[in-house]
Length: 344
Ligand SMILES: Cc1cc2nc3c(=O)[nH]c(=O)nc-3n(C[C@H](O)[C@H](O)[C@H](O)COP(=O)(O)OP(=O)(O)OC[C@H]3O[C@@H](n4cnc5c(N)ncnc54)[C@H](O)[C@@H]3O)c2cc1C
Image 1: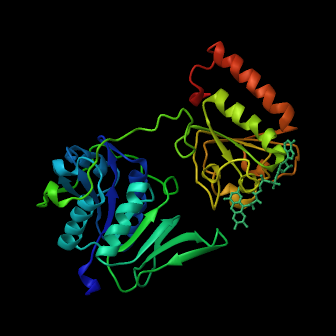
Image 2: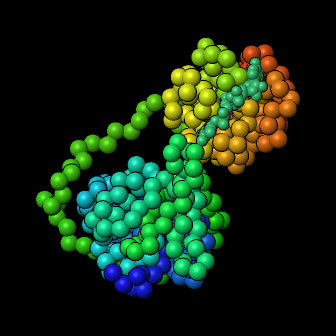
Image 3: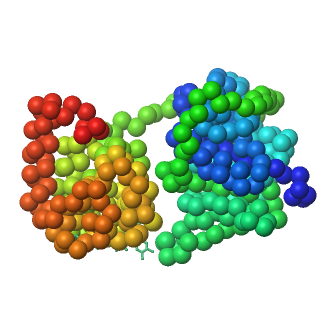
């Protein structure tokens, strides 16, 4: 393999029903930084049906080039068909780096493509950089339960591939009217060649708000004392139409499942409002929520580190304060004093 033949940073643009996944926009921001540091072009790869118009958005968020595979066969995401398109694109244009969102689609596609090429893939990265003298991608991720940050390099194979956690990288502001080079590609692929058939797509109907998409998160910590005490956090979240978050100690105590855990070994979130209730504010928790637009801390210890990370702090007992907040918020919402909670 001649490494010199490979150029450019690519972002796989994940799309559903004509909408680009937010993580792909974030990755265009991260990809732009890497491409500028390497002095190369940033490209977006779009695969789907009737997706060509999305290229305009991809340019506005920083891409110089967009490769589009717009064919009816790509209507629904299927590993085999998307993999074939991406492999075709890699063989034709030879990228140096490809980034994917660490979503179920991104993880599935990246692992299939990396195995077929074959090349190296770092999963679920939270930091990306390129090494000054070698230009190698430095893909870092928490490993061994978050006890170490591992920086992984792929020295001998190309492209260097990584999936990246949603909400960690910063998107650029859209530059309306910014444009670039659109390259339309096609591959010859028949329905009979694809083993996977999509019979139906069932959308989740749960009323519960997902933590990684929520505008409001009410997170509770060990200070709630017990699983029963933690129910207060659920009640406040329900009142506000928000999602429930938790510290690792709460998850380890078995009061809630791991996918609610915020922090280094949990989910990274950036809601409009983050309530941290009975959470001390350990660094491993803070890294997962510190970029929230507004952080409101409730803790009975005035010296708790969380007070250094919050915008508003209430020193007091959660068992007294949460019921008051529930009462006041329900009141206000009923009276429609606050008719859109997301803009409190
Ligand atoms: C490798 C590694 C990875 C980790 N990853 C994560 C992670 O992803 N996420 C994470 O959260 N942690 C993580 N941790 C754990 C982290 O270091 C802390 O131990 C954890 O965040 C503490 O959880 P807590 O704030 O709920 O509990 P505590 O630290 O016990 O804090 C409880 C707080 O509640 C307050 N309190 C008590 N009673 C009340 C009351 N009645 N009303 C109001 N306040 C009250 C106390 O003053 C205290 O500040 C990790 C640790 C390691 C070593």
